[in-house]
Length: 140
Image 1 (cartoon, one colour):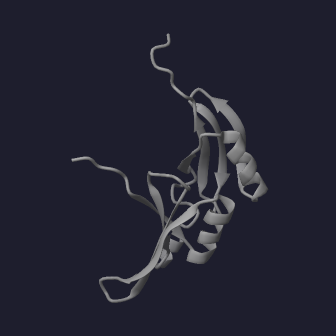
Image 2 (image 1 turned 180 degrees about the horizontal axis):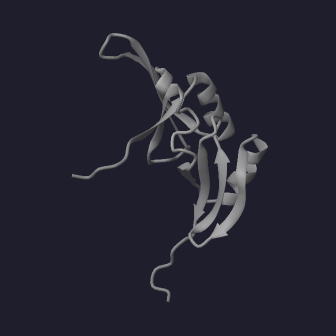
Image 3 (image 1 turned 90 degrees about the vertical axis):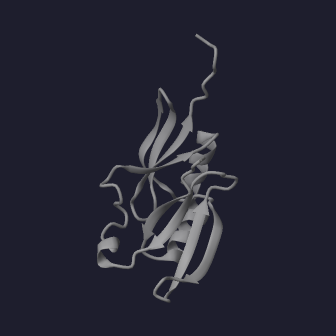
């Protein structure tokens, strides 16, 4: 049986402010934005976003519904980088993100695996913008 990772839940304060950040600042697209009833009969919004043309994992924007959930907004991983946004052109996307007001907390750097810089989302979660080096097979 083949498996894939479908969604990663990101706890947010408000759906609309999160949607604005991901679509305007990062250029993501809305994959789904619908309302359905949960098991208790309450209406629940289901919001999925992701990079355009991505065939991989999507972000499920999950509005905090308890004080404990709200306490983790912006710090879902204890301050570590949480998500890794891969790109095929680091400098293009880095420049666009700067123009759109994305806050980078670590400057771009070259690593053995590629070019990377750390930015924060609207809540303070850390992300890597990352262009992986292309591996050429058969070369010594």
